[in-house]
Length: 111
Image 1 (cartoon, helix red, strand yellow):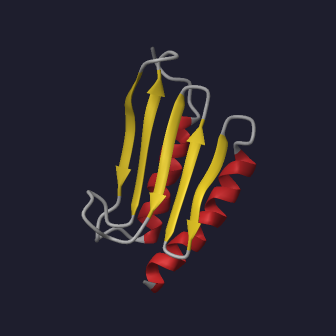
Image 2 (cartoon, helix red, strand yellow):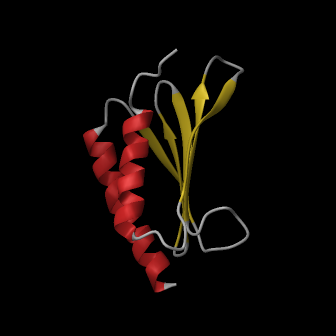
């Protein structure tokens, strides 16, 4: 559980940096902030994403999942991006993949 708490702490610091760097391109809301559970909603002009950090359980990820929808119109969307960590993922792997996800979300989509 200590590793999960450290991952949550580092994720909060990382998200502050993301918000500072991309303040014109991204809007972030924290929907849950518990000692062992963290949930963010991330919005850009073209994407809506959810980042969840939680204890391992019956889901396809170990602790971290980021899922993004492409907003194609007022009533339509499609899955655009998904990242799930695994038991073998290091924190460095996780944050490298989350950085890649933010880069993807802040790019203009190819139509």
